Length: 463
Image (cartoon, rainbow, N blue to C red; front, side, top):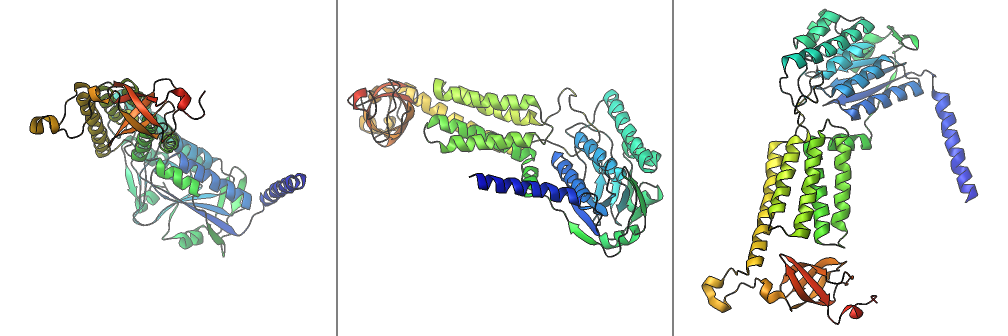
């Protein structure tokens, strides 16, 4: 045991020593990382990791291939801080042809030591809007627009770019083609691809926080730095629709676990889905009111199970879940306005309609079952008289019947009576294992109260 621990300690110290030896040792390599789609906290971590790796390996240059329609303001500011403080020269390359550096991408491109674009790409349109992509009030618009304009002017002055042209991307949503951006001194050069970019940058002197760097890019090796699987996974679930579905599935998993205690599977899956859902929310600008309504839906569903509210609580749970989805990423009362603009962050209405429809259908069915159970009605009574029942049991003829426990009562579980299955609870609070015969002593809606045949002493393991 001691030898194994000592071995791992030595490996750790060797790794630290190796890392320290690589820092600052310049090599003939260039790192290239792609940033696409919405700018989010995941993209912040990817860029920070790329800058750290470039610094550790002594890379001559870090190239960030950019194609984004915009992103979250907090994430944009963090990336700007990383680029302005990078000791390694960073080039933001808006590529391939047809790519865009919209909104947040404008700030990121301007913050690079070298800004480059491919022919056919565009940059700009950074006018502030609300978190849902809607127009905002004049007073609030002036406030956030001035903040965004001040930020982009500061970036332009730090990098020696045209502050007036960049400010227009914020104040008037100006957008520029690659050639127009070059003429307006927003970017430094236009290149067709990475080899052409390296040729154009060879011999250029770049000033970073660590001092001047003269790029020697002839014959360098370009290494691709890809997103890690964890980053890709978090980026995938950080989608409003997926986050909402994870929260919904997690809630349903807990409800099913309450319906069938001891099943374990639904409860474990529900907790995992809820955990992933909240992980996704951590990477999105969510509204706590939406989370509160989703949690309320879980509470109402649980009450429907334990209180048996004729389905009213279940319908309330479905409505609460849909309202939670509407509010989850909504901007109400101007509480989350942030420049620059970013694509609409909201749950797709069809997803809400689908989830809400399913839940309302289930709640309606439960309400119908409770009503039929409470009134003792039978579907086929009108057609076949006393002998024409479709087999539906009513409270009057359930008491005294015997059945078999199919899911252990702990003290709640499932009991089979003839060809029907019922949620049941033991009357004495004792656990009754699966396979044990029980007798119905009371009925409360769709919940049976049962006792083990032979009494508590007949249950194995009970005293």
